[in-house]
Length: 559
Image 1 (cartoon, rainbow, N blue to C red):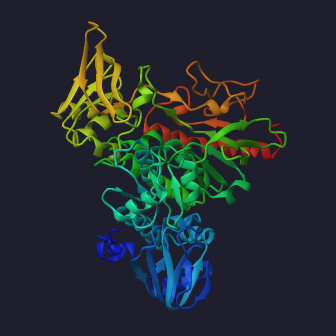
Image 2 (cartoon, rainbow, N blue to C red):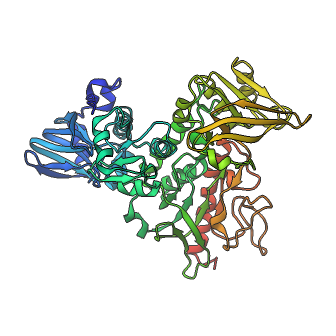
Image 3 (tube, helix red, strand yellow):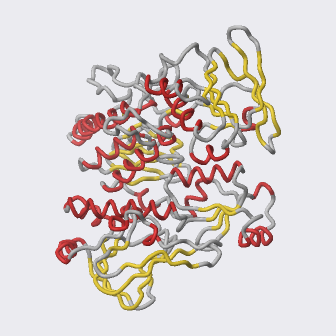
């Protein structure tokens, strides 16, 4: 097992990551916390268990260590008087990723999550320094794989990629071990004798071992899902954590509404997989979708939003017998809310290509993250689509692959892609544009992956087969609205949610659906502009409508 370098020695922004507080700053923080005493060796927090909050060290030292499921304990850093111990997860009471114990007697100020959020808002300048440090610490844990599970399997395995993608997009540290190269991993495989369906094995820091878990099983084993939040009554429940859902959450929570957000996979939505967004206001050098949405995710937690990921909403009960909406969840729990915002977005369409399912996760991809890009290094790849997401993916992948062949059904890009992306693609020598063409067949061995892609010209009917082991699909969009069935929410012919239509003589807000109290924003809404900026704008706009609805409901104007 390789050693984990100490973060204090490696952090290029050490002073921002591990700041030392002045005496006056510590005094101002006292009203937000309570003094605690810890004896030598006593644990302040443990990996996998809910952390109590942020600890401000008044005297003594706290040793921070990483513990993995193989019994290895490695030092990360230590914090002394005037420093604080926490990372971004403590804003919402998440499970600790690392261990912290008293090295000698320690006096500390414990600031619990709710009070920590109050501190960040009440003390603006100090709060900014603390917030930056919490974020940078999580970044450091991720970069150095300190904390989190070990995945045991092959790097190109479909299920390894599935789990890596989930953990990466949720900002959770992890590392991959190849049993052919790592002794601990090899010994574990020999002990458990897993079948091919059992791989990858996942070793949780407490030592428990999962066999090829589902995303929900992995999340619960790591303490990523907070069950305590599910008993609350919320002002608004938001389904979907893409840009529209995150914007709604931030603006609603910052204005005093109690908010929860549910998402079946990860925050960020389709935008979270964008390698670089260059036309978003305020970022002249561009920003990745992951970086943009991660900032919004952290911002939402700062304002007290309960983020439930991964949690799937299976059904929305709109009967409102007691004036409340009920959202049924895939684990049997339910959420009660006074209003609902549909921000569940749209998923890339699965083209009607024979054997497509044989190669999904084995050469056919619907995302273009660093994980998929690693598998394409030095290869000739194909990419289908002519929109902005396809263009961003093509540019990103062109820096890894030998060549990128863009297969476009139409005769040009001007009507579907931003001009800056078209110019970037035209200036990239290893991107080839193939117009009026579509993919019609796939070939290969499902066990080893995709090997050949056949395309057909829509003009001549001529077909061509190329050796291609990686195919990226960014084709159309299917709205994620199945969970709204039997709720009375009106959809258009394509399944997108309609809003703003007159309803029984009642004035309906622009973003309100056919059911009072249910609103829709972002890609899932019929007629919306399918751009990140548009989605964020709708998320901000809908908050005024929420206040209006909640005010009317409280006054008894709605039944």
